[in-house]
Image (cartoon, rainbow, N blue to C red; front, side):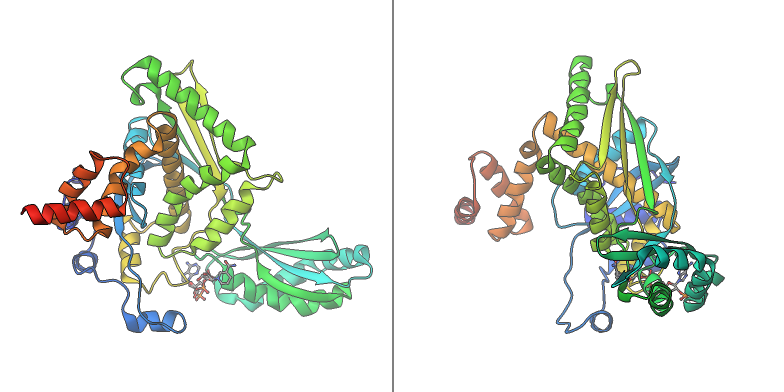
Length: 422
Ligand code: NDP
């Protein structure tokens, strides 16, 4: 395989050529990216309601992630500058330390039927528990195709919460995310559950707190890759470990710590056509499971082995089939770039990207500070907002960086001056 290097300095056309040389995309996939062939309006009009057009976002690639010994080139869709650069930087550094190791704890989705006005909850719980096998069979009969694919309803249990008796169902959705699948199964259980509980069904719906779809990514970073100066490397490690402790005790920091993780996760979830609201909702609720929002990742210093250990666990009910995945040509390219992984492998990759993104953000925060890297990108955004053409961007950025602090008005003045002088 051709080594994918020099992406940051290449043009989009050169990057596509590198992908072609590396044999990462089919002719059809290459044509889609060459033509920048995104979602056709006619298709968009079928997907949602009241369509006016489509909204494009930058589609990039973070090359060189090593996940469970396999090298993957990660497609990312994001409007935020520095996210892809940070992911690429962290991926390279972590690869040199052995890459990411991952674990899929389980891969099932949970849904619920909430019952109310149940006068005897104990009796209802017993009746439902005794009918468990019949109820599982009913759920499977409501969605037989997933059973044919080797998936289907796996477990059913009852919990009493407040005024409600809640019947939970867990389902193996195979390659799908499973929302519609579970909702169909759950709705088929409402009548029998009302009969068994002598109560009323309030709602039957999938839960996005996908605790039966937890995925963990780990990495072990050698101190020597953090700085040439061993003392500085040890200091960075100590501060990254402290930063993870800070996110565990302060919800104000936890929210931002986790936002940094989702900078990476959302970009891949979006590129692969998955439901990013579902992934965000599950991740943030999981982060609050102790009763207080906490950082999702954990970083531990091992000075004796000269290794910084990072770990991230969160629900990752990601799909490779279903929803709108098969519809959008760019989404197809994203899956192809990743080597068309199955849902579990894709989940492993996405959690690894989240951990990489978190590492890059924490390292910047505890060493140079986040604005150091962001200043140039902010100046570039201002130059573009002021109306600079591609050839005018570099001189405007340079002038802005030499005259801090800067704002849009200053960018406009500089651009005008440059135009008048040429
Ligand atoms: P779908 O309703 O699209 O169902 C999955 C589809 O994938 C089925 O048509 C299934 O075919 C097909 N499929 C093909 N191969 C496989 C395979 N190997 N394994 C599994 N399915 C396969 O999607 P989901 O049920 O996953 O629901 C996801 C959608 O629901 C998303 O668009 C999401 O945004 C939305 N949603 C989300 C909610 C939430 O998060 N709370 C709530 C409601 C909707 P077949 O039927 O032949 O098996």
